Amino acid sequence: MSTGIWILIVVLAAILGAVGGFFGARKYLENYLKDNPPINEDQLRAMMLQMGQKPSQRKLNQMMNAMKSQSSTTSKKK
Image 1 (tube, rainbow, N blue to C red):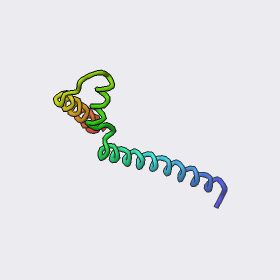
Image 2: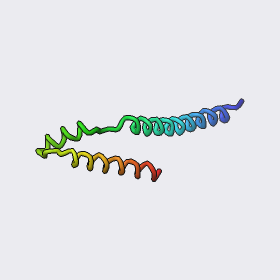
Image 3: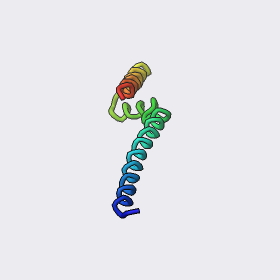
Image 4: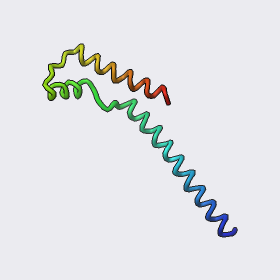
């Protein structure tokens, strides 16, 4: 096997591995974030208290629904 063909095979394997790794990691991260959302209601309540707002349950529900709808529309665009 000539040296040129050997180098071409190694470069193609590296490129295919990088592309496959990128898409595999992306899919894994999307599934992880879907199962484990980055913020929950308790964290949102604590954040609002730190900002000096009195969080009512209605306002918390509105904010959580807004975040869920935004994430679902973002995932539908892909």
